[in-house]
Length: 401
Image (tube, rainbow, N blue to C red; front, top):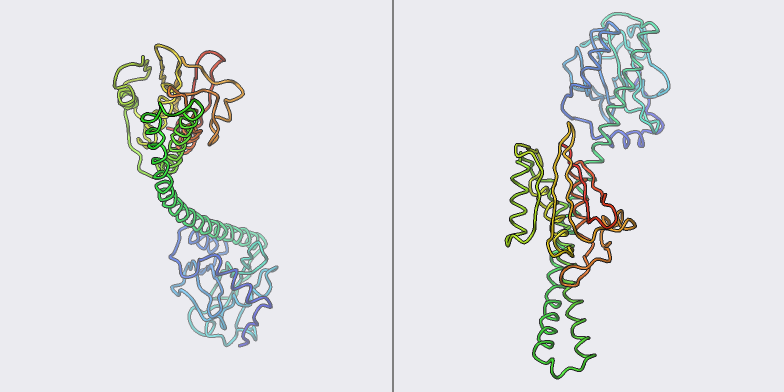
């Protein structure tokens, strides 16, 4: 027996193989289907998907053979990976000086005929083989060789898919870890920032109320400006924290909800004094399988904006829900000042605001609608503002059913 030589790039090849995280994994039906087909097409009792590491050839799939691996120095596949551009065939190992006294030939599983196709990754490294084995001399015809080559390509596609998925899962884990740390930092930073801001706001209010008679016009204006700025900063910090929390809503469980009932709950919540005229157009039997918290947060943000920036003596808000085979379409329309055409795209970007002020004279933080868009898109839908100038705001969004 002549032991196979090591490939010239063995260190790089082994590093590439380990990058697939496939060695010693459990059997998988997709790989077993390929060895089954290879054996049937080539009319051989044994077919293997073999991956060659530093000490052994390990079988990801073994059709017609019980062994999980064999030593590398006696493996036929160790010869195959030395010539990654060609199919390696031994028609009768008993007459081949390299294999005639090989224990795999003289004993079980009696490898007399062998044909192996190298499994070559996109970087050119041979990881192993798809091979077929017979207990008697044999020779594959052209169609069988082409079929075996095609099946080997499918093995490599499965391995590449596995590697991509492993990398994706690793990135997801890293992002979750970083996101958790960022959320923790945001909570701590917000607390540390809000405490002095609240003190500034309280002191400015005290100055304004208790010492207003002693303040000249410019001084009182400056105190009011400090109070307004601190209030706006506090709202901004609260908005950022809420935006951070809403990003995590979609990872929670979904449930069947009655759409009409949930809308009624929200309108009662934000208009406890019954000062708003609502019109709800929705089938009272309509249900939606969705994250309930996220759905409610979308509507709360939109309805709160419609109320907060409404400039009419009698605010009116219409909520219309319709469904198709694939999506639920929701329109939230109000009789407020509306959104100018130049602002309709950018209002969904974080920290972007319009010229409108709320009832207290403050501009928005530019976080609410960014939150709405992230939730809508996370639920498989999209959102846009579709009003005509001077007709109030009209937010239309869809949710995947």
